Image 1 (cartoon, rainbow, N blue to C red):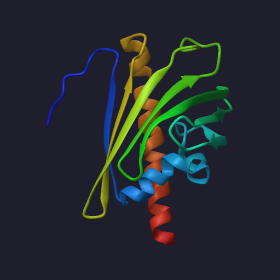
Image 2: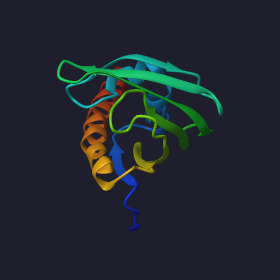
Image 3: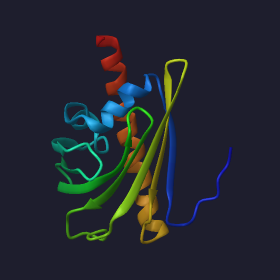
Length: 154
């Protein structure tokens, strides 16, 4: 499978060694979300979620080097364990201030593993899009590690 993306789109496909219900929960339950959201040097002490179509979420990631970075959005579509669509916006004075993107995530399970297809658009420029690749990739590494710990505990 291949796809041609526009310059303002980000696509990251990642397979996790966990069922789709757990990976979906990582995105929709604050106690899980706080464990992995943000790149390696960040923690996520705040995650508030009203997970329903039209519901809002708000969170904050923080690091010693970058300080607090707040974000928020609204859920547009929710199909438990299969699909999640929501807006995403940074609440700061940086280069992405006031820019709303749309994130669409699909979850496909096979043999106990879940392929997560993450799509985010539109970005103001290729440079802004590319600046998010490392952050999301690093966050998904943390998500994978948290999922493994959850699977081992169950």
